[in-house]
Length: 263
Image 1 (cartoon, one colour):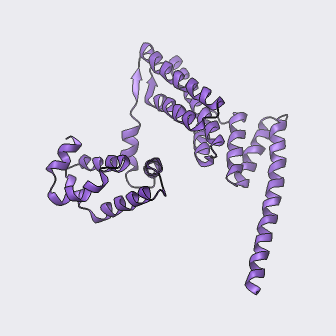
Image 2 (image 1 turned 45 degrees about the vertical axis):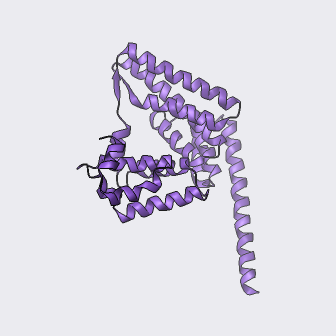
Image 3 (image 1 turned 90 degrees about the vertical axis):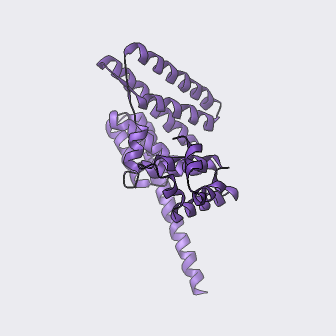
């Protein structure tokens, strides 16, 4: 059933409830999912007070400029991507369809991915990180959808997918999206756990979040994997200095707080 038909066939109260949200793209998209009810009952969701209250809250936040539509989209994706939340299984199933491709078809997908990734590289070099992030994300999306039919092609898919993850990790670092960077680099390291360059990058992402324990673990792993990796040793030394400075700063703040209580 088309979205328009689903709305028009719903009862009057349901139509009235969803009408205010149809002007906002991300909320309109959310409302359109009501038609996917397993019994085709659009009105059940459109007349649910909790659902309508949630939509109102998001609409107000967007109207007041507290969040963007992109923020709302990302929040929903993050929620559904978490295996502990309701809807995760259906979301994963809907977003991880794979295409088994013959070599001749795989070449087209790889070329499309490469074009996007090279665009991302040019944008990255130009420090247009938002645009680079979009290009890398599209490239990774292609690699997540394709599945090779023979070992040789599978190796090519693996190599290009890892390149997308590495590019996204680097781009997120520049954007200070340390949490997202860690997610991409974690995924990379599931396949290639001893890649010193990627472990180092993840360590810097942990350090950027102020997670000194995980950062130290990664930098120490780099030194263990390559004792002559002086960059990792320098990063480890710098982390120790940053940690000591952070401890001093916290102690100073605590003293000021206690002093303020005594006044």
